[in-house]
Length: 339
Ligand code: PEP
Ligand code: MN
Image 1 (cartoon, rainbow, N blue to C red):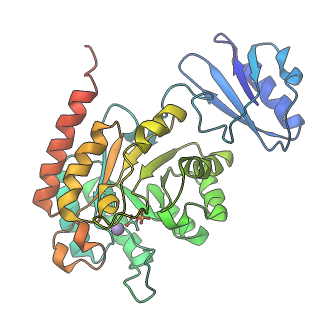
Image 2 (cartoon, rainbow, N blue to C red; image 1 turned 90 degrees about the vertical axis):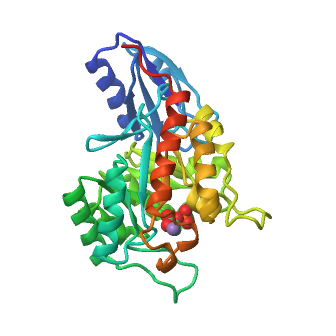
């Protein structure tokens, strides 16, 4: 059930609706928009009777929701969500660029790359302190020491820190040191982690699972939002297909497909989406051209010596070139505001 309030509904009318929902034992999710407030209802097993709401003052409509998701939809919020990370945004007019090494390897490495990221004008630095590696013998990340390095990067360069939490305890730690929590592809359906992320005060970057359908991915975002955290950013990072010329197949069509259903911002990750250095820039251009709100790109000062994902890491020079190219594309497809 979705309650749409009249455009001139008052705050106290909205509050009255929220109280009725709570009295019925359900959870209200109020989404104020540019022209009207909509209120989603979760926690109900069966259909909710619209007559509870139809005659309340300030209510325009009580609509039954037939889709499997409620909170991620444009029905609830017709305008795009702008996720705010301090003074940086994702989903607004600015193209969001999140860049950094796959893994934080040392203070010197993180600082050298952060220098490049800062110079490019990107607002976000991403590096893993906890890495989800296929092999238990591969480099697993520096753990909390890596988080401390990331926190220093934020202090020195003013970049917002995006880093992955592998489990619920990891969310506690990232909340202490970071600005945005990444949930990786392998954890997209880790439902207890999603619920914990939904209780966080930090925004969540939710990567698409390796073999997740669009609905599964959106329902994972719905899990987070249903717990009350509405600051969710989706990220297309490529899926498993029969293709052997790439590490993953970056599903560019997912961007307009998400856009048609959801108000959430959506990014592309051409690094994991291709796995190959020479493909990252072409696919980054394509991602921005199909309407992504930004990019996640892996950069390394010494890709040949990277402890993880070196084959897909851009050099600082390649990264700087990529940024100027994608900005030019973004400027063409997003018309400048009329002043
Ligand atoms: C990563 O971002 O380095 C990573 C492991 O990503 P994914 O979860 O998309 O594989
Ligand atoms: Mn990586």
